[in-house]
Image (cartoon, protein in one colour):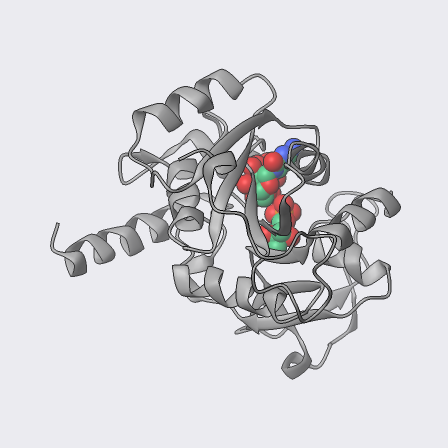
Length: 262
Ligand SMILES: Nc1ccn([C@@H]2O[C@H](COP(=O)(O)OP(=O)(O)OP(=O)(O)O)[C@@H](O)[C@H]2O)c(=O)n1
Ligand SMILES: C[C@](O)(CO)[C@H](O)COP(=O)(O)O
C-alpha cells in the first residue's frame, strides 16, 4: 500500500506538540553509503553478505519489523542507488512499509541529511539507523519510537561499558606514545547505538545548525541545548565495523535461525 492511501493520522507533525505524538507517523532513514574501510577490501559494507543476505536488507527488515515504521528511506552508496533498488525488489519486505532510495554523500552526516531531504512532510518522527547495525531487535526499535512519542525530542539506545575507558593525548605522529590524561568514571558512560529517534523538526534544525563533523545525530541535538533521552540498548544491536564483528553477526544470526527452527 502506498503511503498516500493509508488512513490519515489524527494529527500532523506541525500540530503535534511534545507529549502528543501518539498518532505521528514514523519514518526510518537508513544511512548505507559508507565504504566499510575498517572491515577490509570488498563491496561497500552495507551490500556485503550476512547469512547469505546483504547486511542492508537485514537492517531494513529490522526497521520494517516495527509496526510503528511505515516508510524506510535508504541512503545508498553514491553510485549504488540502482543496485539498492534492485536488492529491495529481489528480497521479501513487508508490504505495509514504503521504501525510498536516495544516493548518499561523503560522510555519514551528509548521507543522513540527504535522506532527510527526501522525507515526505507527513512524517513527524524520524529514526536514523545504521545499515551497519543489521541485527537490532524490534523491541529496541519500538522502545525508541515510544520514547519520542511520549515527548522526548531525541532518543538514543545505549549500553553500559564493559571496559574501563582512558582519555589519552592522541599521537601527533604515527608511533608516538599516547599518554593517559584521564580515566572517566565508567558508571557515567554509555555506548550509544542506533536507531536514534527524533522529533522531525528537531532533527532538521540540528542538521541545519551544526556544521562540524560529528559521529551521531543525537550529538547535534545536544548542541542545540536539548535533552537527549537514553533507553536501554541491546547487545545484538552492535555495529559491524571490523572483521571480527562480522564473525559475531554470523553467529548471532545462526543462533536466531536455530531458535526460529529454520
Ligand atoms: N559517507 C557515509 C559514511 C557512512 N555511512 C553509513 O553510516 C553507518 C555507520 O558508519 P560506519 O560503520 O562508520 O560505516 P563506514 O563509514 O562504511 O565504515 P568505515 O569508517 O570503516 O569506512 C553505516 O551504515 C554507513 O553505511 C553513510 O551512509 N555514508
Ligand atoms: C551512530 C553510531 O553508530 C553510534 O554509535 C556511531 O557513532 C557511528 O560512528 P562511525 O564512526 O560512523 O562508526
